[in-house]
Amino acid sequence: MQQNQTSEPMVLVHGGAGGSRDQDDGCRLAANGGMDRLRGGGTALDAAVAAVVAMEDDGRYNAGSGSVLCLDGQTIEMDASVMDSSGALGAVACIQRVKNPVLVAQAVAGTPHWLLAGEGAERFARSAGFASHHEISQRQRDKHEKLLRTLSGDTQATPGVANSAFARHWNYDTPRAFQPCDTVGAVARGADGSFAVACSTGGSAPSLLGRVGDTPIIGSGFYAGEHGAVAVTGIGEHIVRRLLAHTVYAWIAGGMPAQEAADKGVALFPAEIDVGVIALGRTDAGSASNREMPFAQVPA
Ligand code: ASP
Picture 1: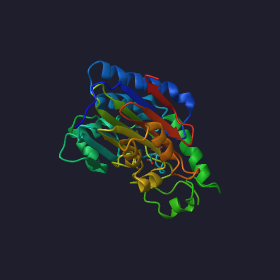
Picture 2: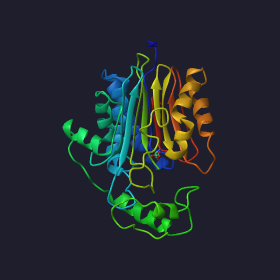
Picture 3: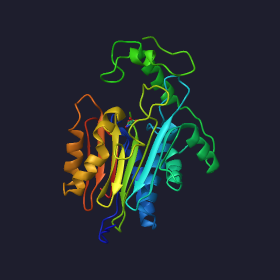
Picture 4: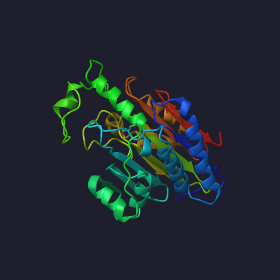
């Protein structure tokens, strides 16, 4: 791996496309925590993961303790991922009852596999020492009530998808509760020119049980390599079709400035699809979103 000894350490954090800039303070705290790890001799991966853990614990973002409720109003399914330029790669999908999915994703990177899903992921978490954790925040209960009201009306809860589709394909073992996105992510660059990305989400709402978005899918929600690191947020079903994170990474690897690559990535999507990108190149950084998106960059 080529490394640039003169790289300026940097951490970028987003709090999800469609969030509020009023929540930049949590991103800044997380990015500063990541930078502290770098300054203390931690790797780029340590920094990205520390930033995402802070966001998962904040409670205002759709990840970890703030994760969105599934349509049954009880279940929480979360996705998370990590990757760095030295080859570390780990992810979890549809994991339940853990506090910090990104830490489980980091632990998966130490197994023979790169992605664990569902019950197997949760069992792995227990055997790796992660305690059982299931807390539903009042904020998410309120959002869920609002979503149920939307699903009962004429406004589409997901652009381009009839509300009735969620009733027709209902796969929860509780009666359906109605009549017919904000993920977090961090990218880090170490002084040695290494790169890392970490992402975590409670998924999107509304969704069927077992739904997996882009966040734990390599090249879609995240990518890191010797030329940079990219984290993506937005509607996963659209993002995976564009392999957005790797597309932006490939542009940066080809010499495009990170800001231009982030802008170009967001421009691939029609306006009604939420999407946001944060990206680091060897000497620069970029961020873009077609919605309000909490964000921080350290150093600014
Ligand atoms: N990308 C996430 C997903 O589709 C949601 C988000 O970024 O808000 O699961």
